[in-house]
Image 1: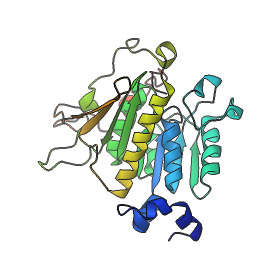
Image 2: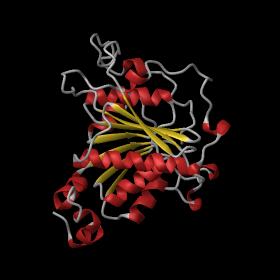
Image 3: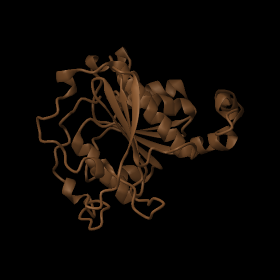
Image 4: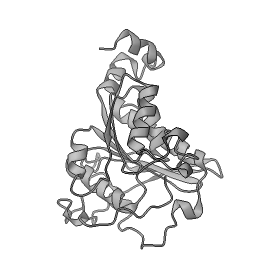
Length: 277
């Protein structure tokens, strides 16, 4: 049930036919884990909190620095030097004190991934490296958790939703990250954010779209991005959607899967940052 304060706070949701009281209670009961409190995680976290998502987990082992503030809007100047989870939690609690923020001040690894995501309904990937993306993709598949993925470059962004543990109308599994990128690019071939830069507002657009897709998944409204990749080109102000096909040869949910647990991720380097956050 919603309190009088919640009814007042969320009344713009309550008058939406697609949300209403029932939908707002779904948001209140939902548990979302956000990996990364950076450029994507910042707008994503703020809109999830504002929407009234009842429990939001934040996993990040980094600390706020001055050069984060051009795009990571969940952090304030006074937070420089503090952990990103602590900084984000303070901002989100000030925005909406009616929700619960759970801080996971740690890097997600093969050893803790399944435990971390086990108590959440849906996971959002706002990470900044390929190793973490593959790890999250595999962990969410094994744990049967929906994964809303986003990435951003200097002037572009990409969003999709993975429910690879489910099948389509034809009985084939839905695609996963490995169906799009069978292998990570060789080290050194993708420039990091510090080298090429990023227009801060681009991360805001993509992170906000990611938040929208998460809310849609919780509320079960509209058309999901499962099986589709949304591409945003900021310079042309253009959106394009392309279909993603299941790869029967992919090692996770292909016809002859070889990834049955997360042991293949043990010892991988998840610290190589790409131009994302």
